[in-house]
Image 1 (cartoon, helix red, strand yellow):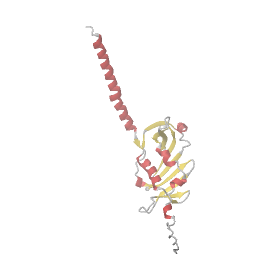
Image 2: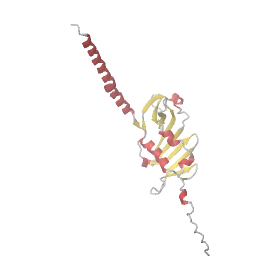
Image 3: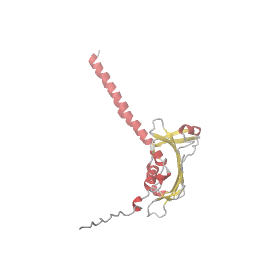
Length: 208
């Protein structure tokens, strides 16, 4: 039996719609779930576990240590290249990224290709020492092709097959570490140095 032309068109439209639903709803959800599973936390330590940080950029090598007087302000001290209290807001911003930051994706690549990600001459390296003396390292390379993420290595080590893991991390890491030394220092409260405001007494006028 030959189907009417209108019925045939409706069947084809239904099949096309079904394919659309499959690829964009079912298949798309599966791909999103796989991508979500690829997101992994970079480090597993807590903020209170960190004893010291060394941030090395192309301009500066900065050593930070937790203030041993935990109840006092500031929580962090700059040990070098100068000594003094650190800007807690700036350090906390970096710490939050280290503790909560995720890798959007992990690429397994031959170690000889580090140069392709600018990880052989990184824009910054962050060395972390925990209170239990364990150490971690995060190396920040260049941005990926669309500038949304940075290539990075966490605790770099070659795998048995000779490859290395390259992570895609937030560009916020670059914003957190590429700072002038003055930004890392605790802001000076100039209000404490201003002289008290004095109002001159009015000069009496002689009345005749």
